[in-house]
Image (cartoon, rainbow, N blue to C red; front, side, top):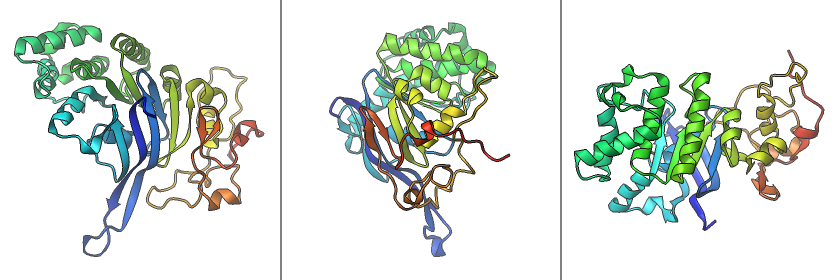
Length: 335
């Protein structure tokens, strides 16, 4: 759509696997394989799925830490593959990422002041040190940290402080679009709600657009306007958050939602849990990639890959039998 701030069209990222004669490529890992979606300005777009489904690879593609094997990525209507040097510097400022491991994304020998002001000079956001320090202090204030942390090294901060610090570093340059890759995975439960509330408040106050990547469906539902479910490099379902969580159509989505712990001893039924392990992304199953784990798979599922199509207004799914899992008799895996 022309009004999408961010757009992916048929994006793929395949990683070669060695092992052939004379170092030839023996196979390819299809980490992302033909993904298309758009994110409108002001939205929080949730991307969910099991580990290894391609979520973080999409994040790396969107910040150009990886180049796509195929497809097109655009930001503000501009093709990311055609940005010149000046446009690339502006892109680096307007698109930021918060990695899931804040400690790993900080230099252990660098004070927090230097960690905050270095991107400001690199991207030419400020002209002098005084302006950089003032901007860093404002960023800390936005995330609820005291200026005293600027003197500290990463190991001298708590997990929650480090997470807030990397959010402040991303916001200090004045981005328009922020990618949040598992933003609460490194903090304990008592801090998760604080971090999520902070991110929601910053979105409203700064007019930000988010891509929220997580395997935690509770976080995704709380934060997201639109949710896409990924499985083995492809999107299998996409809809508004309310629609997807109340009327899921794909068996994999139903399995994920059914696995959410519910604090009710009477609600012990588990519906349509996925069977077995995730297939190898090197040797993908024929037909629907989920058929080997789906309790409702038929012959057509093993032979034909279902396209992602609109099944209801604004609700997309890639399934030959959409809705069957949600309406079927609860499935219990063998003990």
